[in-house]
Amino acid sequence: MNGSCRCVPGWVLLVLAGIGCGAGGESVRKEEPVPTGALRPMAEDRANLPLGLEVEGALRPDGDLDLVVTVRVAGRLFAPPVLRVAPPEGASLVRGYAEEVLAAPGRDVTYRREFTVHPARTPLRIVVQSVGVAYGARAEASWPPPDAATTPAGPRTEAVPATGIGGVEIREAVPLDRPTSR
Image (tube, rainbow, N blue to C red; front, side, top):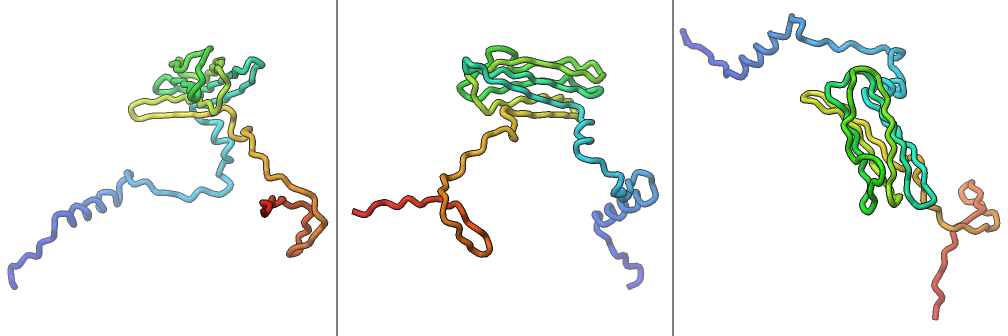
């Protein structure tokens, strides 16, 4: 077949053109392996975050909860940070604002705010965030902190004569209360 032309679909040409465009230009980012020794610990990375949030609390004898919230702003934010405190259902803030827009002066700054929640109920959620058109930073905390939350008590155990099962010595057991037969 002389003079015949083999047609190539348009999407194939676009894909080939896209491959060719990035082949020699500097617009292609080349991933280079990171040496293991160059990795930083997670704690060091967290220290460089734009927003930080710490919460301390104390229960008062009258049943209220006093909180001290510390907000750290590192460097310049593109939008002012907004601090929000959300007490759980049935509790309310009796001191402090539920929402406050903090100033973003373009330098490192620390804000300290005090709150009282009546009655003391948990969990209490605290959020600070700075959100712009193409930017966002957020830090969250709760009271009580997750590591300070109480763990439920285990089952009641009783001492038993030492018994070996599978090489493990057993000295305590959970009693199984059996219903009395009638």
